[in-house]
Length: 249
Image (tube, rainbow, N blue to C red; front, side, top):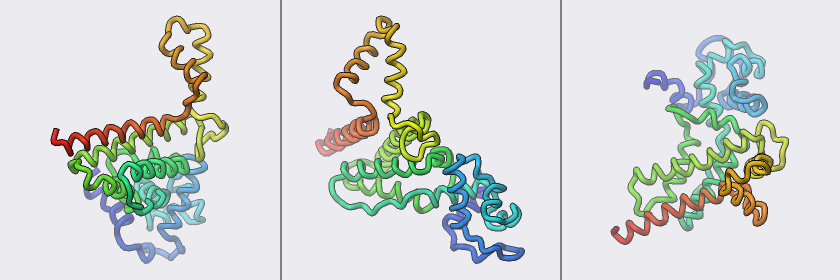
């Protein structure tokens, strides 16, 4: 998209709230109300269900009336993302590692509550104040840790990617709060182990390492810990990099 194409979304997300539609009778619509309607539809039916026509019907207005407030689907989705993103909690202070752990868990909670955010927050697009506030909180936690600006940004992207990967997996198997299926109490690791267990009953000799890993999980546990394991390893790596920087190596 060009900067001209981004213009409407920038104005909706960052400009002063409009007093009303540019023309025609006032319908009592607000950008917040439009976003809430779209969010409710997306929560129930997925992002594809939140069309301009569907949102207009939910608000009991014509599609043309909705266009007077929101010029298209891209801008509608931008408003929905801004409305659905949970407010980033102010940084409580304390060690950077604890702050980033809390940040990652909070982000996952938001994606679990509104799984369609995974689709809506990809690609080059305009981000609103709430979404940028999440980035601000993570970067603030790394301030003064010896990383360059580029490294801090990459660290945040790495953490967000790990969280998104967990949320995507949960959504795919219907596990976790806010998932589309939501019919199972088992996490994705447990479900995968159950499927693999069936296969390994007859093919264990072909995959000895996998069989040993599954046997260890069955004996000692450790399923559905991917979030904590990956988060810990990412933060371990950042801590090692910080130590090397501090030592001048």
